[in-house]
Figure 1 (tube, rainbow, N blue to C red):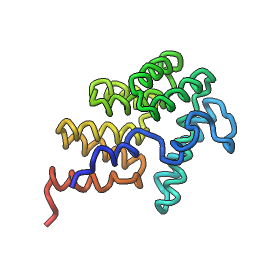
Figure 2: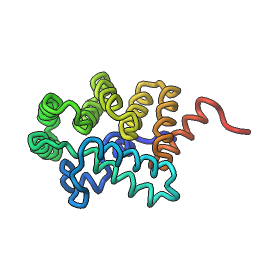
Figure 3: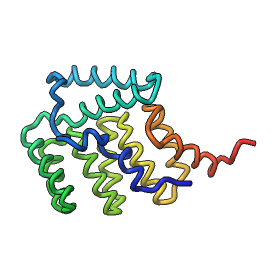
Figure 4: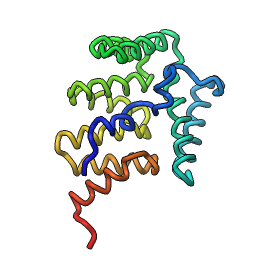
Length: 198
């Protein structure tokens, strides 16, 4: 049975639920402010740990640390705009949220979370072309972005390209082997495309 889009959206594009409840645009208090090199080394370490996480609880904790790194914009202006994006989304003002995200990617094009959020909103509006373009920008900047990979797989499924979706989901699992819900999707698509083992 295929997963509904609503269920998968949480793991596809957005930050984990705990990051979404609070302010998801600033650095967590416990993380020191680090330069770009330190941030890259930290992410490399976290992705290495994620691949060998012994259980789902540890994997989830590592995943949340990765999201915490991704949501740091290092720009007061971007932070302010992202706060307004969050308010607009909560008020179901998607067009306003998109305009605000347009501004963020213009002033801070290396901030992948703005591209990722905009991809999510375009997906919700069924504007797959623009969503795919933004996912491409995310993956150009962070090829290991399991959220964007999952979102790409979801779009491919929606447009009926199950074979490509399966490949993309497998890429996401290569980065994050314990990614929630995706193994079930992979199993379903694998059976559909490659047949059941006898």
